[in-house]
Length: 446
Image (cartoon, rainbow, N blue to C red; front, side):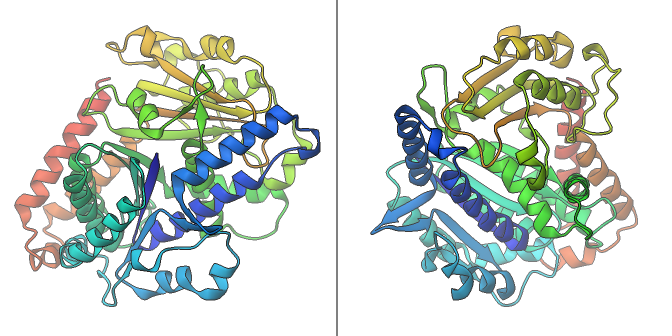
């Protein structure tokens, strides 16, 4: 089963490249390789084989990413395809699947959406080439930012085209929410329009927030003892480490590898609830890994308190809060545990996450959470690693902020002329407001 990544706009291409680098890095990383048993080595070989088959086309010892790299500016694409940078990787992009423009989208969703319609034929031809080189497609994984013009506008158009092309394949879209303080003046308009289109065409939206990623990066840089400011590379590394912990092979209780669509089915019990968040522990700098040891119970306890506090970070938590005082509710949770440790984690999960107050009133207790493990392969350099993917209320505050700030601009009819010239009128904005406000209301009522 294959997964095809759609790298859309500057953010999507930078994150997408790092995703493939992280996948390869994880496949090459084995803790204490000299101590691995024959059984462990066999399991690791299976893990690597599943990962490579899922994300790469393999031909004559060459790895070609199952990806489309799309941007309306040359800068990032030139960096991706630079011979010097490609020579340092274990993999490469297929040239016919790299689509670039020269005019950009001017941080305008409507312009980006128009550019998507102009490039539709080239994009679909490249996508079909990827399909022809896949035995069977498990999921399509678009990656984009909500703020700019290309990732948001062109990205929304491309996702709609792919939905029409493959109506039965899972579309898991990774979206990056812009800084609260602002990256571009119309970022909230762009975000609103993108969310309304994606909520119609995608099966799930995996939400990352730049504000949170920067806080996380500051924490890790500070803990590492490095005297420097955080940068976009730190944030992308955190995002891709989290994302790849979900994308890499994982097993069910029968020890068979589960496809991504199977995991998504357990997270999406209702077609209207599509917002996913990802929390991972431990949260350590690379310099601290060799000096840290964790037990499953402490990791799951930290995850529980992060969830109750509605936080992505494991610091600054209010440890006096109890499950009945939770600040977030979910319709489904999914746990992925990766380690060589064979110890069972079910009792710890039952202790911390089997509380009705953590879930919506109409979620049956049997569906509170699902658990998957990989017991013969650690993740990257972590001795133990746990990922919690939740379909919960956490992203609602970001959506609420986007809608509120968009209304402030819309009430003054500010900047609307930039969209009107590409035939996106006030009614299109009003439709988007209605849809996203309904999403917010539905999640708040869980």
